[in-house]
Image (tube, rainbow, N blue to C red; front, side, top):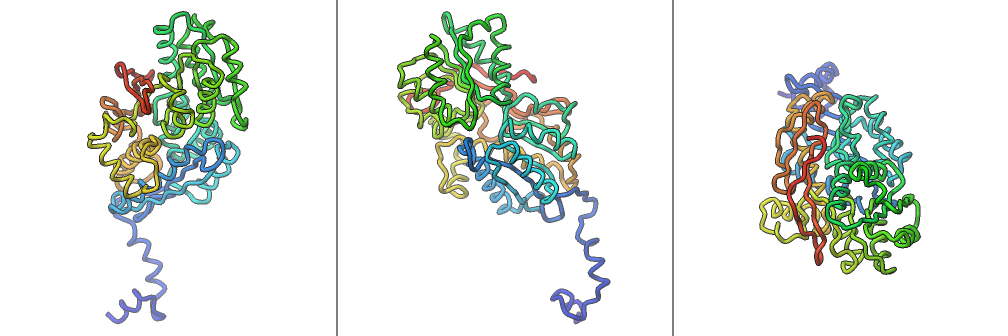
Length: 409
């Protein structure tokens, strides 16, 4: 007993040979690990724009961190605590490459989770697949994240931009008499994905687009582009921009007296970061697609999932804005990653993580709109595959119409 006590206390009489044997006792029988996983920890990496033109999305990374804190407070996942390493890439692709190499090669994370942005994820797409590191549930709806044959280590999460844009195009043709369409587009892969879908949706009616203007994320404003769109005589405005520029363009449209029918991409449909800064009086009847409950929509106040989310916000994000749907998004996607890691059991290899990610059947993810579930398979890397349309009324969104399925179904 005396010898055992000195060993536990790190006493000088401890025999070195016993320390060599210690790691063998540490691993659970049958457990298998790759970098980033042990008997006690799961390390996952993330990049997020905590600064720069897309910093409105920074709350997503902070909320994901809060979600894992909750999980760890509850004992972790199969007895392992989650270490979430999130780095600021400023929405700059070269910076993303630098940060991701650090996460994979130095931090040695098991996987990347919910890295944000189409241009930023594009910059690391091939690298992640060459390294065979899971690149999971990306915070971007580009359609290329759902191509398991070409990129088996990358999987998206939200409905894809291409399908969303097709839906807007078809709705315009069916509901706007003699449409003359102006398009504002961010000049990168994110904007181009929406634009290609929109053109596909218009088909032979592509000539209905009378003005197509772009902006760079480094531009200070999109005021001149908005004036150009008004001067084209357009009576429809399809807005493919991140929150900062979406708010600017809708506010400017009102200032110059342009009153088109407006369609806003889902990624900027937040009340707190887009619609309110644009001025509620300037965004009435704007149409967008939705797949998540919006916390400003009172119809969800008594919903059990919304009540649970509000309790989580109060405990883990007390300074967070409870009107910001980005917190709902972070909670939903973190739940999906949580479930995927749980299914891995003690086989925390990168291969098994991808296998489990591609094996969800009609999983109910908290805060998704009723009727919308997550399904994946080895040939289907689009987890969320449906949306509903909604229209801005007063100070919140109002859903209308039926659930519309995405192209992957």
